[in-house]
Length: 332
Image (cartoon, rainbow, N blue to C red; front, side, top):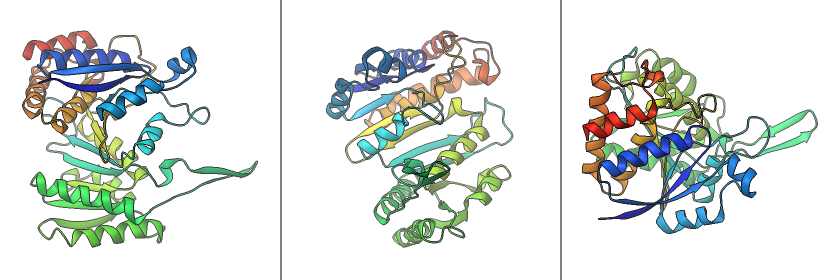
């Protein structure tokens, strides 16, 4: 069986880890066809568009996108292409699973947290205005519709995966209207799932609890900005951003990407860790019903990490991206 997907090669380490992941997918017999596009700053400088129109058209045809990291300028320049894609295609559910791997030594064992982050509104949506030359306003938007669908997805996932608890993260003690609405919707929806424990915690407390007793968390659902920050924190619990995948799901469209950025400081050096992007591709395979192929890839990665002799520098090794890729393919 062959399925066609859209692939965006981004900036920095994006092209390197994309090549590695596609090679592994092919070696695993994923049976995918690729429509590959260059996107990002280099594409803009070459052709005047950050994302070519043909790339949008490809995603709209194929409905599935594997997107490597894209550089976002800090404080100036164009807005995040990630934010733009999420809003354009209403990719409202950002799912980020953080799970310990026995081969990667960290401060905690048995971390297994799945974060559901609302992806389209809140402060992170970037709705800002200059009031005068000395005053900037950033507008926080929380709606019942968007809150309800992300909360429901979190509970549905918990039921489907045999999870026990969903935790709502907010700051409703201060932002009583916006975060208060999100919290209220959480408890309204939770009543439809009496078999799942429902609790809520204030975001600063969650940050503390995650670095003291992360095993207490199971499924977490939260707003856009908190989810972005806390999911990076959970990546630190399992060994770093190089190990944290994600999916961005909406009604009819699905985008899969690593959580980490484009790492321009190591671009072109051949030492980037493609694991998070590969595990994002595994989430994509599962979304497409190719569960057996995803499981084979996950097993091969686990075996390479457990063996420990072929590890990229971020995991304490000296292997190149190509050597790590070959080791995984050999396991397959």
